[in-house]
Structure formats: C-alpha cells, structure tokens
Length: 82
Image (cartoon, rainbow, N blue to C red):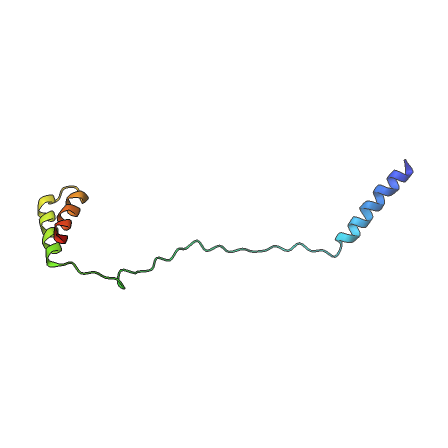
C-alpha cells in the first residue's frame, strides 16, 4: 500500500514539474467571409441590336405593369436571331 501511494505521489510530482515551464497560448483566428463580386459587365458589355430593342419595346407594351413573362421575352428576342 505504501509503495502505491509513493508511486502516485511521484507521478503527481513529476507531472507538476513537467508542467511548470509550459504556458497556454491562445491563438486568435480571424476569418473573413466577405465575397468579392467582380463587375465583369463593364468588360463584356453588350449593346442591344435594333431588333432586340424593338422586341423589348413590344414586350413592355404587352406586359405593361403586370407580372414578368420571361418566356414571352425570350420568344420575342429569339425572333431577332432568325
């Protein structure tokens, strides 16, 4: 029994000595979650042809203040590629 207590005390003493010169280092991590959106529209800016301008005018006259109808707009614009 005495040998077991001595061993336990020795383990505690040696672990305390080994921990004596250690320090806790707190590491600060900064995470930047911002995403950059590059404006590529200016680089690849496309101008509408006169046909496409007319198709958009027709679309806006049909739709007025109502809800958008992308299918109609696509169909009108596709006529310009014929």
